[in-house]
Image (cartoon, rainbow, N blue to C red; front, side, top):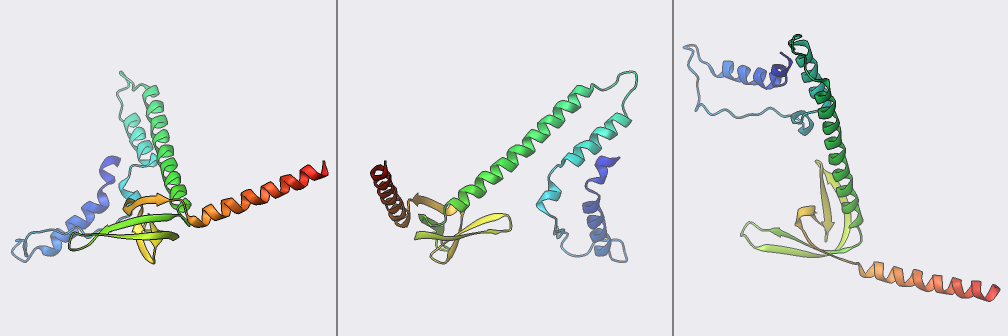
Length: 180
């Protein structure tokens, strides 16, 4: 059945490991602890729309024709699945927008040291990087995750820029008033 095939790669690795640890007497060698060294992408562990469609096709193939499955349930589940995916994308985009909006702003970031102390760093955000799917915010040459940002303050540079723009707009208004 197709559902059993979803974990077939793991089963293949697990059985290969079990065969490799058997000695000639058929007993397993070592401590008996199995370390899962299968490297897989995060997306491989999530349910995709393809998995849903495979499951739906299998259920339709194996249904009782005297008591058929209600098709509206599948449409409803597919709509809910699509909505959930779109909400996840929206959350990811909001996180991306927030992370990039921090550039130039003064922040306070903190990490817990090995001793258990809280080491804080203050200053403007120099850059934002995406490392292994996680946003890294750089303050004072040190990288921090979004979870480690404790406070966000408006930058003194942005305050100065706003004052300059405001002053230029006032000058332009005065020039326009003089022409009219």
